[in-house]
Each structure stands twice: as structure tokens, then as C-alpha cells.
Length: 286
Image (cartoon, rainbow, N blue to C red; front, side):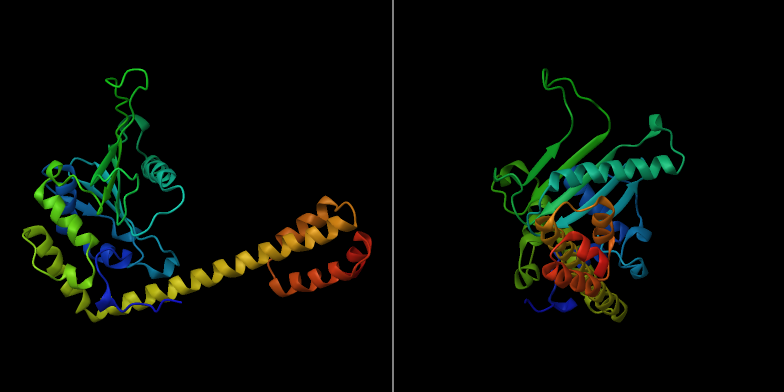
């Protein structure tokens, strides 16, 4: 089992540190300007949706949710390793932003443009590009854009087409992909130096060290709960498999077993199922 890193050992590719850095609106604005290649007057970062400021939520949501002065909404997340269905997560984030706006009273005709941005410390599509941008177009005529206002961007620290991106974006991606020693080196980028200063301030903050400790405890709790849930599900399935050998399992019995959350009781039922000679005998002795 890998040992938990201290806050001082983290780089910006760590979700906690990335979120802490990007909660500064100037850092977030600078990143969006570099990625999109546009000038943005002002960015408002939604702090209430970040675990760093609300650990009582018992959530590990660490993506950055922001909007600019044109009311364009952004969801930005760091990814250090490939995950199943990452592209489906894009769809979920876009729909989540739309739903939050609709619930707040926005009419669908007034939905703003939305961007979902993943910063990946790997190449998500294996084409050695630093940036992959997606928006919907007509399959029969690629010149026809849907123009529904949704764009998804994947950045990769493993690209090779440096001549096709800006020097600032190349410097940021080099910084994002670096190890601790490399990330503390000299960079010919004012924005990266700005991030380095923010990271030093965060690491020197007692408050942030305490928040990181709380975050790690919440992660441990969630992982432990996940393991327990997995054991509960596996034990229930094992009980049903044993009973199915004995005969048809009534629907109500299957529902009772699958809805039980007490692992010790499920273990007891598992032992009982292993000793039973019929489903009815199992029911009688539950």
C-alpha cells in the first residue's frame, strides 16, 4: 500500500492541490485564457462546490466550477490516470451544469455556453496531441455545427505537437506533468511562476495543511465504505447462488437478502445457506 503524501510533497497534478490553487480566481482565469486562447475579464469560482471549503459534505468532488463575465460556465478537473468512461463523464458534467441552471430558474433558451475541461497526465486518445477539442457537428456535412453551446477539451501532458500550441500552454503542461523537483524548477512562463508562488503559499498555510488532513481522512472513510459495500454485495450474491442450487428463490426472499446492509447478518445467512438442504429450511431458520 502506498504511503499518503504530505501536502509539501504534492504537485499541481494532485486533485487537492490543483483545486486549492484554482480557487484563486486569477489562477483560474489565467488557466482558461491559456487553454482557450482568449481574453477573459473576470472569473467567479464556485467555492461552495469544492470539498476544500466544505468537508462536512463527505464528498470527494474536486473539480473546479466557474463562470466568467460573459456567463460562460466551466468545469475543470485534473486526471492523473485513465479512468473507465471518461468521455461519458464529460456528458454527465455538461448535463449537470445545465440542470443546475434550469433548477435555478434559467429557461433552456437562455442556457449559457459550457466547457468541460480535463487536464490529463496521460494521452487520452493516443494521438500524441497536447489538446483535443470536441463539439457537435453534422456527420453528413462537417461544416454544419449544432451550436448548442457545449465544448469538451482534453489537455494532455504527453503531447508532441508543441509547434501547434502556444508557449504558455506548453509551459503549463510541462509544469503539470513534472515531478516535485521538476515542478519547482525555473520556467520561462509568468503564469507558471504565478502558480509556483500560489503553491508555496498553500503549502506554508497551517489552515490548508489542516484541510488536507481532513480531506485525506474523508478519502480513507470513503474507500473503507466502498470496500464494505463491495463485501456486502458479494456476500448477498454468494447467498443467492447457494440457494439457487437448492431450488427456485422467491422474489421476496431475494429482495430481503439484496437489501440487507448488515455484513455480519449476511455472513450468518451465508453459513446457514451452506448448511441448508432446501430453500424453505433456510427461510425457516433465518
